[in-house]
Amino acid sequence: MKTFDEYWEQYGELHASMCGRDIKQFAKEIWESAIGNIEELKKEYETQDNRITAYPIYVTVQELMPVGVIEEGYSVYGDGETILECPNDCEFHCDDCIDSKETCELTLQMGYVWQNIEFFLTIKGAEDFIKADGHNHGKLRTYVKHFNRRNYEMNNLLKEIGFKCED
Image 1 (cartoon, rainbow, N blue to C red):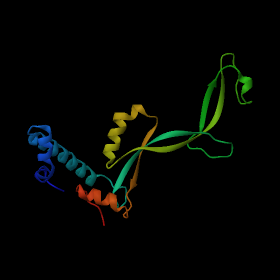
Image 2: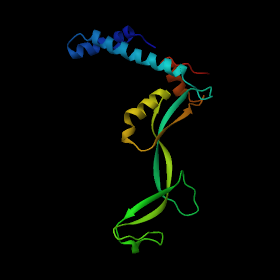
Image 3: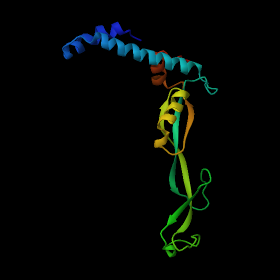
Image 4: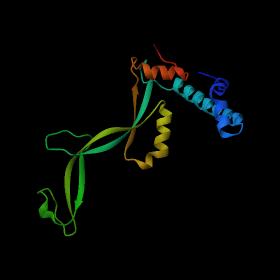
């Protein structure tokens, strides 16, 4: 990984001249902050539970999403039951609809799947996301996966920023 001075030598003078002022100190502070964040991330990554895999892991945050009404005889995730309240024209619905004067209820078999919505390198990062953004989603969970050893692109990227990867 290049040092700040190496990057500055290659790109910095150009950016400084485009801004019309010396921004080296400001850029160095940003660089050091980013490096500090990467160092913290590497430390967390190295000390977390690897979930019994020799390969580098990543953590997905998944949301339980409905996929529609399931025909009789098909399996569904969870209880698979959703109750809809309908306007009082119950003659439109099937015999399962329970009549009342104001509304009727119709029980439908719903299917659900876990859909990936974000991914993180650390379990802590995924849990922090759920705490910070969970109110914008339905039911959330974390799911740990691993990068395949033949995913050379991701393994090389992780190595470049200083993560340990098995060859």
